[in-house]
Length: 313
Image 1 (cartoon, rainbow, N blue to C red):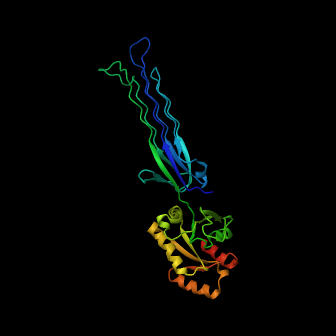
Image 2: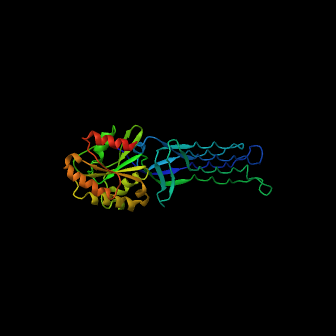
């Protein structure tokens, strides 16, 4: 199952403590500084199922720096930590909602939390006024972020529409996907992906009126449309009002993010094998008032599937 959201805490390592120490046979100080805490990086990888491998409320922490030692020895720096996240991940501050970074390319690496500076040992704190300091300066803590990681699928095409509009069946026919299909709404409860000639198609779970406000997990689903280049809007030919179906979905998309309405859109009138062809022609004319490209399709019609493939490329 595709997990597309993770709450996690990311921490850079704390610095090591500065040492308070004096040479045995002399009165002079010789305490060394603490090592620096490790930095925490996030790196984008191509495994979109990676978030499912992490437990809820995961804490990722880079290594702390080691304390300073006697004879002016500085503690070892803490090791850096590299956290792998799926490409398309957006990391935001859970408390403020501020977007910190987005990982849009495989291999992209971002410094998320800096490690803390090590404490200062009493060797470096000596001065003309204080020749034998019996104190050290404290270390700095590593940066910490309580984060929300949201995976926004990076696909070339997105199949959208009301529940039971035939999106998953179409994905299965066009690609090698094996999405669950059934004759009831909300069969798809998480996005499905398929690949055809290197192009990725995302089947976005069915949208309903109120999706932009979160109804039917709408906001969880709508975010996946943001990255696609072309939208394939599926409308069932079994609908009693195809124009209303079209406007409901477009309305929810616009409420969620008006910029999505600017994406290239192709309307697919699905399940045409179940509808009288004269009625199909009427529906196409009605939908042409809203979209220039309206294609009647059926998973049982080879020619219509080939037309879609031509549009994909």
